[in-house]
Structures are given as C-alpha cells and as structure tokens.
Length: 312
Image 1 (cartoon, helix red, strand yellow):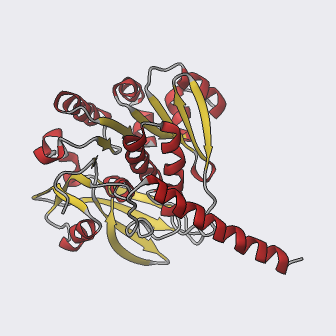
Image 2 (cartoon, rainbow, N blue to C red):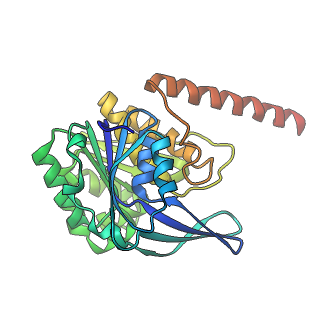
Image 3 (cartoon, rainbow, N blue to C red):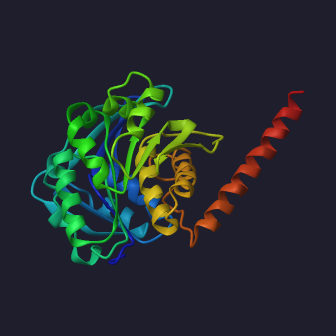
C-alpha cells in the first residue's frame, strides 16, 4: 500500500449496480476510482473518499492490488454511494439513479497527513461548495498542483460557483456540453471564445472520441484522440482523462504533452470493461508509455492493411 502518493484523487468511491440484458451485478466504481486507476499508470496514487459499512472488503482489495493507497478511504455507519447504471443493446450506459449516502460526508480533513506531500490533487465531481472548501484547504496546507472537474448536473445548477472556481485551480476540466452550459452559448465555437476570456489557468475540454482542447496562455489548441479498434465501455473515460492529465502534467509541466497522453489513457480505458484495461498498466516513464501506444497503433495499422487487402 502506498502511503506517500504523488497524486491524490478526492471524490466518490461507489458501489455501482449495473444492469445488462436484465441481469444486475455490483462492481466498484466512482469518479475517484477511475481517475486514480489512470493516474497510477504513471506514479504512486492514493484516494480520499468515504464509504458505508456495506462497502465490500473485496473492493478495497482491488485498489490495493493496483497499488493505490486506501488510507484516505474512511468507512462510516450507513450506506455507500450507489450509482444505478443500465446498458442498452448498443453497449451505451444510462444512469438511472444515484444515492450519494456516505459520499455526502467527504471533507478536506479526510486527507491523511501522509498525503499532504503529494505533488498533485484531483478533485472529482462534487458539489462546487464542497470543492471550494477542499481547494481552500489544499492552498493553505500544500504547494501541490490542483485539478478539478465537474459534471452536467452541477454545471446547470451551480454555474457561477464553478466559474469562480476556474481561476482558483491549476487545471479545470469539463466536456464540450458542459462548456456550452457554463459559457451560456449554444455552439461549441462560441463557447470556446467566451471561455478564452474567462479567468483561468488551464481549461481542458474533452470531446469524447474526437480528443481534447487545451485553453492556456491565451491560446486554443486541439489534440486528436488515438483511434481504438474496439470500444467496450465508455464509463469513466472522462475521469480517466482527468487523472492521467494531472499525473502527466505533474511530471512534465506541459499541458500539451499531458493532453496527448490523457487522450491515449482515456482511449485505453474504453477498450475494457469499467477500469479493467487500466488496472494492470504501470510505466516507469512517460516515454515508455508513449512507446507502448506507438506499438499498439502499429499493430492496428498492420491489421487495417490486411483487411483492406482482403476486401480488394
């Protein structure tokens, strides 16, 4: 178990009730888990969260076996955060409901002292008021890089609070739909122009299979996604992007390199069920990861040429 992580993710660690073809199973989930699984690809990682007495010990074992510290996960009386997810015939996930339960109690003071020397903290989607209190705590207690992302429900309800948070963190991540809501614009192009004028450090906008955009130092730069031959599950890809972006940025200080790497990690996450594609991955350097991605792309290109030759 890692007691002095380089990257710490703060947010919900959940029990996911997943229904596929009428059959329901329970699995480990939550934004903090997906972002931690991605971040640990490049370094020591820990999670800060709260769970209930119903949280299976086997779920904690999954994290520790992946090299993620669970020292910051506190177990409380009551039930764990629960997300109800149904997959349709096309494999698309639909969130049918959620109960935050113990997750409502996540606080800045849950961060263990041994975590405060971390180089980066990622604050997963939560109520912006709670995120603000965690940001204030981290700015007072650490010199770390702070990353934060949100989701559509909060973007619609707490627009001003999130805009106020943008310049307070080093990295603010959202998707393209959330960008339009926060900027009060109906087109993505106009949203980019509005956000460019908004106070910020680095704004990262994810666009699913298309890639991501970085707004930094007055410039807007696009980074295309890496093609994946087989997409299995898109759940948690945004969280995986955020976690890996922070881990890469901590190592390089370069948001453009971090965006390219995070695109690749998020793409890999989609090739397996929930976080399974990321769980075994661990690289001693970003260069080794890039060689791994290059090797994968060469294999895909070779297979594509074989298919093209077959159908001629």
